[in-house]
Length: 347
Ligand code: GLY
Image 1 (spheres, rainbow, N blue to C red):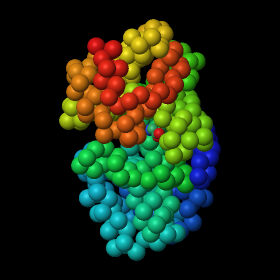
Image 2: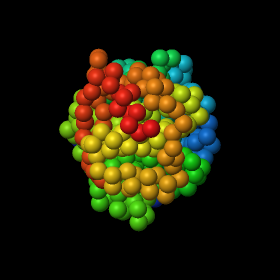
Image 3: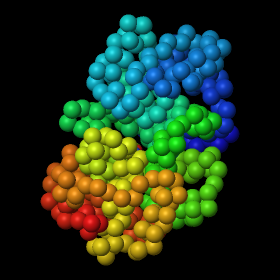
């Protein structure tokens, strides 16, 4: 079993192994000694793994409760959060009990935020079942729900107590959901792992991919848990992506929007004389290899106007993640008013 130790405001491990879901109860018991375990999941994932997880927890003596909400980003809102809080209160869940997020990014975000706030904080454990959640959202403690004004606008930095990644769960994913995760994987290579880009071009085992991404995120979160500096590198491509998601009314998925966003930022950086062309060649090749889009249909004006309630914005400035060469990005603050002109370089 691969173990990656994360050191943030609290310490925890990310465990990676095929078939690990079988041992989930046993692993959770070592971390959470309480008597009740609450599985939080959604309508696509719970029918696949919910009962299996429940049995594994019951074997360890837990009383198991399940809170299952409708699958999809539309559920990541304050209504679901309130329903979950009320469910926990009605069932007399205490601070020594544990929440378990079984699912993708939406499930992790809602569960994490509920755990951060219910009784002013109870333990939660992540069992990510999508590649995107394994390599990104389940690590680093960003939890949130969407508001009418935008995605992830209400949340907390709150670390899980343990993350269990079983790559066997990825076999049940539709191809497009798997590709979505690959966009974030390619992002790690682009920001600071040139050799990993070679590995991805050649193709490699999914366990190695997950481990490399989690270790990279570990190193970044150890330095900047609260996203005030280095962690912003993880937002490569995300500012235009944010605009694209909104403009498409979320018919373009997060991973696909990030893929297009990375293309826009790389082309713009080349145009501005900040980036070597080879970075774009690698990026485009990898996105195509993993069935991700590279073409954008929206104008720089549309993207810039919709991207501007992005959290990367601080007052009148926005921090951009600029690729410089293959496997190297840096941060650059520019006035918000110059963002449209900057991305026009990609068109
Ligand atoms: N998903 C970006 C971060 O965790 O900072």
